[in-house]
Image (tube, rainbow, N blue to C red; front, top):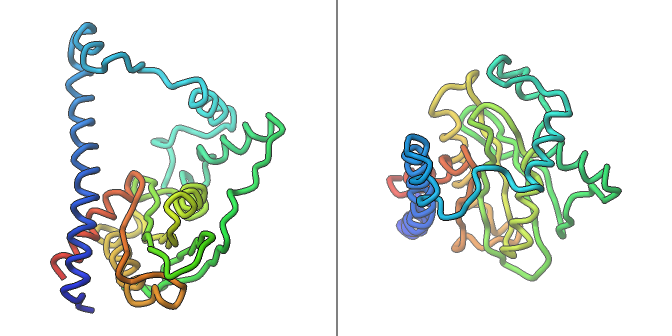
Length: 232
């Protein structure tokens, strides 16, 4: 369905925000490539004191992830890779070892459902924080290289984002490769964005304050959705 000019303007604003992060990320990646081939002295000057090793907390997560017995992902089929332990599993295991709670961060309301998609229903989860409304809405796309991970893997991110931004987060899944070729994931992501624009009022969201956010592969989807909305 066609977006209105108002929606396209909102999408253009979202594109500007997402593009800024994307450009920053690309610059960092390019810098990383240059640093890798530079002499040690140049690396130190470029990084300005940043270590090339994980900090103790992250190293503990990596060590725990290895202890969970996952296999090298490049040796697995997509189906097998999706069943491997995740960093989220490693964090939970560490918390258990430390005698800490592994309960998810509380939000006022969590609702699972489905969004109509171009090739069938799309799994989605709506996180609503405390507070009156209508609230801003964030359409969130998880990572996983377009192949692995799901809403559960990135549940903690969506919860934290809802509470920190005081916004409703609609976490949307998408068809994944290799079973579903490009642009299947992007089409699903755009369908989720359109659904939110048209249904935000029904879950106490403000359709005039909608943004798109993603992690890793989800960041690519967010940027693509902003472009698609601008051109719609």
